Amino acid sequence: MDQKNKIMKKFKVNINNEVFEYEENTSYFDIVTEHKKKALLVKVDSKLQELHKTLKADIKLEFVTLSDAIGRSTYERSAVLILLKSIKDIYGENIKPIVEFSTGNGLFIRMNGESEFDIDKIDGRMREIVDENIKIEKMSVHTDTAIRMFHDAGFFEKEKLFKFRRVSRVNIYKLEDYIDYNYGYIVYSTGFVNKFGLTKYKDGLVLIIPKKDNPEVVEEFVPEEKIFNELNNASKNAEDMGVADVGSLNEMIANGMTNEMILISEAYMEKKIGDIADDIVKRGNVKLVMIAGPSSSGKTSFSHRLSIQLRSHGLKPHPLEVDNYFKNREDTPRDEHGELDFECLGAMDIEKFNEDMLALLNGEEVEIPSFNFKIGQREYNGNFLKLGKDDILVIEGIHCLNDELSYRLPKDSRYKIYISALTQLNIDEHNRIPTTDGRLLRRMIRDVRKRGTSPTKTISMWDSVRRGEEKYIFPYQSSADATFNSALNYEIAVIKQYVEPVLFSVQKDSKEYPEAKRLLKFLDYFLGIPSDNVPSNSILREFIGGSTFNV
View 1: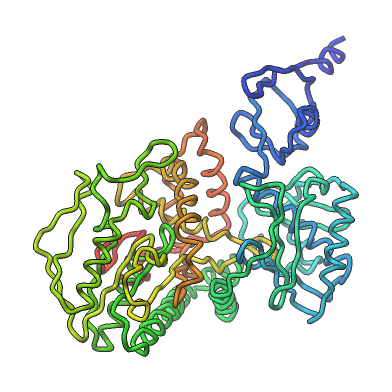
View 2 (view 1 turned 90 degrees about the vertical axis):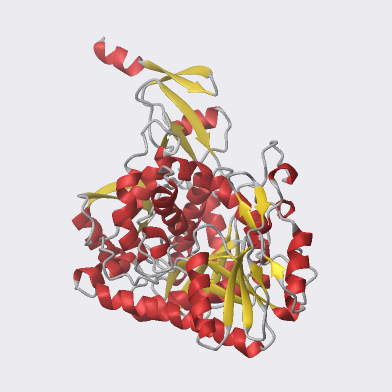
């Protein structure tokens, strides 16, 4: 009787404030199927769970779909697993695919090994696997066992990675005869990944999956040559330095090579800044250097370092922030929610900006305004400027790549720079580090240090920040004369010391907790290093403190 009651025990499941009853051990997959939802994961009392998990208590259940950020990353990760399995099925050990980085609207996978591969064969095999709707198994194995499995499978970066893992067990995913480790969740079965595209590109291929805001459509691949080249060069530079993945980085730290790695990384960055300064000088007629990039790219430190390089060429750079040309608060437009929209181009006094810049180009003296953010008004405090033969403006602002901001200014007088922290480091050969993760960690420690903003608040604002970037910055990045990658190979190992303690302050019952937990798990891959040897002019100092530029 007791056994029967145990089997028949039921629990309440709250879905959108409607309560349903299910028997104990009902899988979340069965619940999702019954409700006809295209869920990839579920949130159980705000905790993410894969669909093979089963009901153990009364819960509140939420569906996670491709329209959610975590849902899309799960979909991409699962598509990569199917892709890697397909390549292995067709080419065996002859091709060693390396999952590199996002490019355009896709994910670039380098095909190391055979120079020729048939994209149609790979696409066809992937679709066969999807049509077969094969259940993806999740196994928990001892870390030592995982290391042996990865070694036998030829996944030497994973083998190296797990030599530095403190946990005793590892979750591994198995798709028929193919095993792999994945940084994050995977879908229940291959049939969930029924929309994707493949295209050949450079020395590899690009995997395209639907966007969050258009989950039913696989768009054509739109290459971004400049960003690809910057990421590709950074990736190859990391390989040359021996720090293409986290396991290799940890090995260098463990072998006492930290200071050498920092010096080489900083020297590489200084050379890149010097090359941009050289190009500006060669143009001969540049008077306006215009810098834009997403949040936490290190724009301020970069502009200071670029100015120093320009001074070494005999020029006299003057920093200028476009934010000083904000419209007064009462004239600021509002967004669709009725909130003041400070990020849109309409928030800027474009006419006054162009009037002042044109006057400077014509040799006139101009009083440069400053914007008082406390009262929301533009002020004039006697900051007069007149450009001589060797003077040059270094202008920083969210809209600097958009020609509508500077529409009256001669194009040959402008030099546009796109800057972003394009993380070149990967976790291992099949797990990349999204560039947004590096920027979020940077912003988190700066927000705590400079603004007193909690990590909970930073995480809650991040989606909104990214929407602004996608609307006002990313569409114009290809128009830049130069692209600068501000990510440093070693930086996350340093950031770890600063950000881990504050991430632990995120409360378990908050909606930001799953993201904080994910980031903590991510940071656990890294051996930490102290910041003592980070140069005072490093872009990293803008976030951790101690910058010679007082930023």
